[in-house]
Image (cartoon, rainbow, N blue to C red; front, side, top):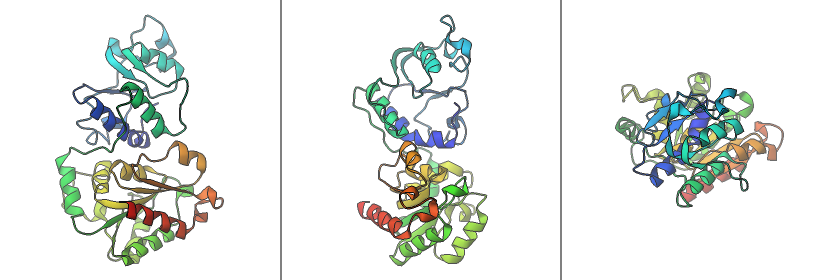
Length: 309
């Protein structure tokens, strides 16, 4: 359906597991409607994992694509097609492009997207392949992360933003949690988007020793930015806390043990971040909105992550 940033981020462990299972294969990625963030904001992230982005040819998006004489993907044929979608027409078209085809099984289809991808990977590799954290190959991103968050301190990440206000845990709770971490001898690291300058200013006033690596890097490899930088920085964190939003998926993709703060149970299950170590708190379990989620519950969950890491 066209992959936006959240779709791309949640699939990264699947892609890393696929490359590990087929280290010598040529891997081609095709989005059903041609648009994919792997050709844009996440291009540098999947470098070395995906060899080719396919955006042309019949994919099943148009009704006529299903006609038997129509050749999918410009007539391309692949040894193996792994179909991550659930649309019947597009799946029929994708099936014709592969000598071997793996798609949604008749039974055992989980609710969570990450688990669905794990099922497909297992089917494609006869049970040997599993999702895994992506390892960045971009040397500048790795260098930037090491400069901005050098070895020594214990870093704890905080991403208080979200696309909708209803998904945001109150900023003052994030600041209280960060202060607790600072008092425990750890270094809070904040991640704010370009539209969150007011919140970033409040965080700076509340925690004078906190780090804001995206904003304060000055002349440190300034061409490394966006998801690539956040994913690289995530590898330096002992743990992180984020709302149900893009930054949380970026921190998970980078390997940070993650506390994910979710509004409702259904989305918390279906779209949970693909973190290897994950704690999830759902506001619905405590009340009607994100403000119902108590500070002490988040504090306890974060400590569990830190002890585990």
